[in-house]
Length: 314
Image (cartoon, rainbow, N blue to C red; front, side):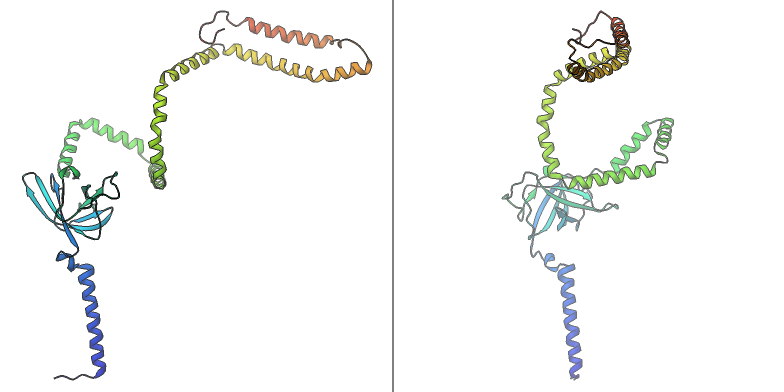
């Protein structure tokens, strides 16, 4: 029997404790040995029209968090049945939709479970043995069929026309890299800021139908108003020269009238101080200037057409 010194036994005990902790972390944290034996797990089946790229050990998520794995995929006469093993600690509503998505650019697929928008808080949860029907599932489009359809569409376009489209697109966006980058950055920033006010935007969208419906109901009145406004602006356009002359002549007349109104208080005070009854006589030069202005205004008014038609005519 080997005999070791006390320090050696202490070192061996420390090494054994560290090994035990490391193995436990590996078994329960990474390998998840209890899940391999079905401890803390329950099984749910998903009916799919096709596998959509799913494979055993594919990740299953709920609201963006991983809650399980795809255990197996079986093909039957109606489509594909995927068996899921889910974490019992995460409660998932029974009325849930399952969609296959790509997790990365290389095509790694995963299954996402999403609750319905109107799911109540006290809704029943998924239990062991439940089945998600094919009506609540969705798979991505087959990339092969998509590429074939794109190839057929490109072949249907004549090469010369396709070359013209490419050349015109190059002329349209050529050299606009910084501007396009700013547009993309601005759109991203707008989307991020809009995401902070989802409730307000949703409320605005929900409350917009009454306002839009009122506009639809008053469409005839708006059209009539627009027609009348078009007629009024048309009359203004037709009489543009006359209005220009009127404004040209009317401005001095208004200024003279303003000047006369400002002189009236001084004339009244002068009459009171001189005790001269009656109105103050107008000077001949001022009378001639007023007469010329009124004659010009009369000539401008005489040049306007006497016939008129439309909703703005008296």
